[in-house]
Length: 194
Image 1 (cartoon, rainbow, N blue to C red):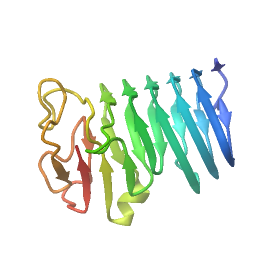
Image 2 (image 1 turned 90 degrees about the horizontal axis):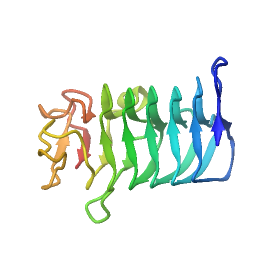
Image 3 (image 1 turned 90 degrees about the vertical axis):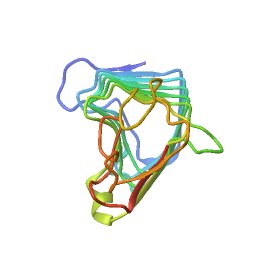
Image 4 (image 1 turned 45 degrees about the horizontal axis):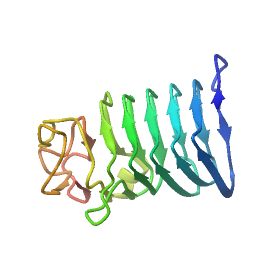
């Protein structure tokens, strides 16, 4: 367990050397900064762990390179759940954050049609998934997010929070911006595959 109470901009784990950091059944909570932060290289495997009550649960938004896999974990009650470039998320919960996921690369694997994510991305105050400003400035991005559970009956999800027909939505769609996901409005080069 990595826990902080008080302090200013406290960070649970600062990790920059690029060797594999594995968290299994860990609890990282209560940090006024990030639960995990990397400013250069992050190679991270998370299984069965919880990130809660931090300003940012996992912050690799400034990392030059990152390889991140998150499985059967919970990211909840943070101002920002995950800020990272390309990563893989499976069978996890990203719930009750201000913003669930901020992508700092043009692609993310939150679930594919052939390999569903089985994640729950719901109850996030502003939105579940969005691109960071650096990606928006780059002009394009694609999120693979098939087989997940979202807020029900929002942005054309069904009453169970699913998208059974796996629609491909882009930023020019009237469904492109809301509490489930937020694509840059009016820009068809940003897409999400549900």
